[in-house]
Image (cartoon, rainbow, N blue to C red; front, top):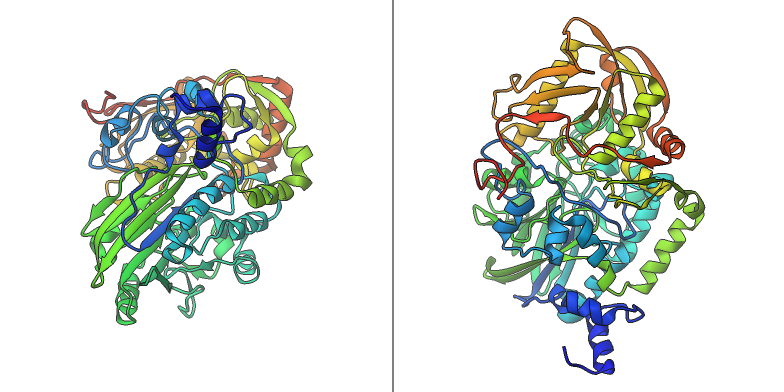
Length: 577
């Protein structure tokens, strides 16, 4: 690259690079910043999309899974690709920004090269650029939910800090899932008093009278086109989370009601129909076959990065990853109430190469200011990568389970298979904020109780059926619960109730008739057991444990043996390329 210093900094400014960096030349050689923005606009409608932010207002590290399994029919399809198979499917080159953002391969080395991901101030810069290019009247910005929960600042403010950030970010419309774990009264307070965006959902109703809790849809004029947006909150909210948070409300997929609203907005003159969804990527693909007349589905819940849309029954389905790592952009050309052309890009929010929006950056600092001293405390160090996402096992979960086992003196620990969290690189300090990013829920207490061996076997089978059922309508979108003190083998393709075998408890065969001392958090599992005892919140237990041991080095190998498939990359009989 043969350019003057002035030209260099001009290019850096265009690209959104921080010109104060000491390594601007190096950064431009390693990464072509303009490639982040390369996009040929189409038509007059631009839909911007985020999903599953999980309250991450600041940039973070987030590693994608190395094992991503499902039913045999689904492995190798969008939503169930990982590693080299993901790169092969989408044509991604190694050692690129896309490889770093979309896969686990070379994550630690690429993290040094490309830095942290996401951050709402950096997303806002991309949004500003797109609006300046297109005109604000041609842009509609939507959020598929799981936005208010997932970090300490979200928990401490009961979602308010995140709503403030959404307002500054310019979200127009949203739906929800983990939002409801603040309780229905708090949700209504935030929606009615603080949130500037429209919160819509056609599938949330009063269980006695059937009245909808939120508007089912909204119709907006975007680029001279009437765009109807119908909302779907997570249909399994009262099952996936304690039902007391939404007592008196019903959820469900509600395809018949959805069809009614599709027809209704068409009759009101809508040119196109968009479903803003928190159903999950696979379920939305099934839903597109069940409901006619949906042009676009903006999906969420399963945290999948999908660089290309999936087309099902003429419905364009996109999903935009998680944790603020991506901004999805879908441009549409519409003629005679039909989409005649479209273009999609999943922008990686590579925060080291994007100049943040100053106002939103300042707001984030203000939102964190009351908690900075507490959250920035370094409580220990890790020798290995601490990550969350994987089908069966993750290193950060292992640290949490080690802490729980020490605290409760139990035989077995069950840890929820949530898909949100953070990643800490080898050699880095672990902060209080990191621990909260793995555990920040409104029902954090750890319980110690007793389950029989047969109950444990049945529990594992039930969880496996949720994760690996071939019918997307029966999948709730999480990963397998992690276990400590309990190892097992699994055959993914076996029938329901027959997947789990060779269960060992601390090296000995599981006795179906014996009672075992179990500890868990993040749900109501303790209610199925006997002699339950409540302990401290999981974040307090984990913080104290890391402070005591000072350095953590959890094993990288899973305690689950998969009998019939490999890592979830199906290109060679279930084995990675």
